[in-house]
Image (cartoon, rainbow, N blue to C red; front, side, top):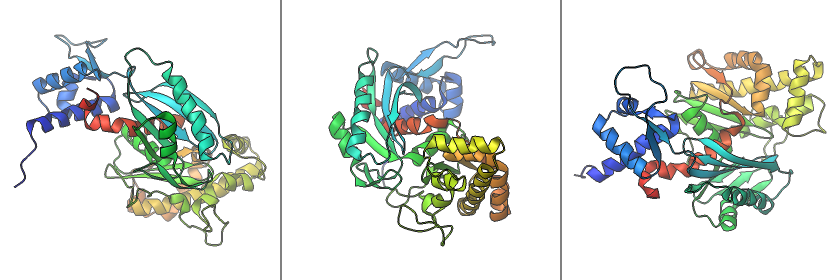
Amino acid sequence: MRAGPSQEEVRRHNLGTLLRYVHVHGATSRAELTTRLGLNRSTIGALTAELTTAGLVSEAAPRETGRAGRPSLVVRPESSTVYAYALSIEVDRLRAARVGLGGRILDRRETDRPRGMQVLDAVEPLSEFVREMRQELPPGARYVGTGVAVAGMVRRDDGMVRLAPTIGWTEEPVGAALRAELGDGQLTVGNHADVSALVEHARGAAKGCDNVIYLYGDVGVGAGIIADGRRVSGHGGYGGEVGHMVVNPYGRECSCGSRGCWETEIGEYALLKHAGRTDDTGREAVLGVVDAAMRGDSQAQFAVRQVGEWIGFGVGNLVNIFNPEAVIFGGTLRDVYLVAAAQIRSRLNAIALPACREHIRLRTPELGYDAALIGAAELAFEHLLEDPLLLT
């Protein structure tokens, strides 16, 4: 028989559980931690004392209390001094941030990414952003790691971007290139939609939902899928490429080489083509069509209707397959959803089975544009949350 966990293993597990709770939920009283984690008061006191000594949390009396008697101490993550770097490589932008424990963005940088920019050209500005932020660290700040979000298929083991047609990359060693430039072995690369889904599930629009589809759209479309509280990643970690679900076999050729992929019907190019604005590209161009539709422009309204029909069509099929509680529309899909919500819902209702659709909630990201950055930071924080004593 296999022996049960040792007392030391239990202690480390409890430390990680407590730190993770405070990291996700923010300032929490000892009394609430006792209730939520199912541990007794003395154990919670010992754990918080150890995490305080390690510099990962702080304890203080609540700022306000209307109750008689001695108030329960409040435990807060040390957001200002325990931090990770988060990098996001997107179709049109390169972004970087320093994110404190607890998901708080402390510093940020961003710049345009010209379409067609190659990996090494993208690595340099991102690395420079990190070097700039290092110069502004407060005394005693403690680095956990770096997380990178990329709009493409990523091999998590080494950060190889296997395929990112919307940014023009195939088999590009993004992780290795950034590690070499930054001299940093604590660097993890993940998919943009995946990390956004995880953070929206933990602290955003899908909080409290264990079955979620997060759709991220720009030129292409990807999804982060969570089932029973766990990320559905597939054998190689490449699951969620819903943008390459073929919905129209006679449709336009896709950048992946197939024809009629979902992203050819709902991505940036489809909306701009229907609106007669194929000379424009990028988020601002999409926002221009959305704004024109809201002001009554007939061609813009036609474009939004066409794309909305296909969004509802694809989401209806995903709802039948995964039976989620919530579908979140991120990236430019958020902007289209805001003006086509009724149409998307109508098409979804026509496609999805009643038992799968009757409870579904359609939402926009609560963390908005920052979801990818905060999600990328989560990749770096994960090993600390698994074992908080790694920093001691």
